[in-house]
Length: 206
Image 1: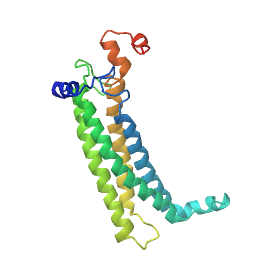
Image 2: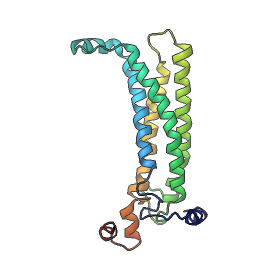
Image 3: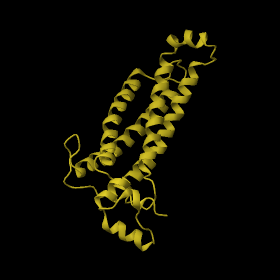
Image 4: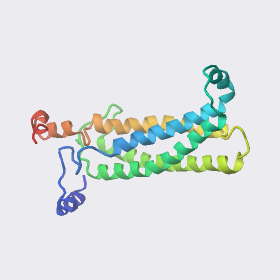
């Protein structure tokens, strides 16, 4: 927790709620789901576009008028959107980490303390943002320069990198989930219980 930041918020007339934030619901987890969804769709549709010759009989059987370029279009725009939204994801995450007050004595299922988990998740988030932006730039060069006239718009090495990143996202996301579920960071019920209050009574107050 950053006492100076809390004092600055109080000077602005902003009080922290039961979840330790100046707003009712944490922003970071919501942005996280956008980052995950957009990037997963980007990689999935690039894989679908690459495997299009195998899918064509199935699409034809269901009378679905889909061209190979449609898959690559969806993948490209989702990659761009993932790059943009992840800046907000990381920004919200760091702001909420500064206001976090996790129990110091607890250990996660991975045997890590709250401070170590937050550090790994924070640094990992910046690394993830860097990788997503780098992947989008790489994807852009393939789309507009290197493979502009190629029916298969993406390189197999790009797809492999994307699949490896999905594995990294799983590990990184698990650290974030442990912060909320196990350490109770910005978890309203967990915060109130640690303060010795009854969540059912407090949350029912107008």
